[in-house]
Length: 172
Figure (cartoon, one colour):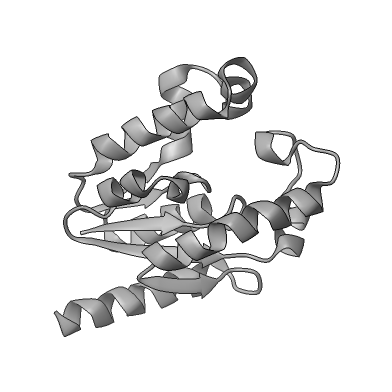
């Protein structure tokens, strides 16, 4: 089984993923961290030097490598859902996909640096709302579970995911 965490940037995928993997005894993989390590530069530098399309291709290749993963919690990048083949790769095999939903206000509160190239614009709130609007239907489409992260602790979210995983296991 692999658990795939999807959602907008700053929704908590990495922090929740680490805790969830620890609780399940699974390996934790942060796709963005893997890309940074592989490319030897921060994501914002990949975007500025090579463009978003190049980053998305690297991200796609990463989903191909993770297609056969097992006993793993995968924190994806916020835009991974924009390509259907990415999600087909990630959901291959025995998988459970959790959409960590976040409100624009929370993203604004959590954004504390310039490491998110898609948010390094003049009107950040407008950009967040536009990106969320384009992605919301896709997050919903691929999710086996949706949980709002704005007003919950990491521990509360991890517990809810564990309960849902257990319920899904019992039902199968």
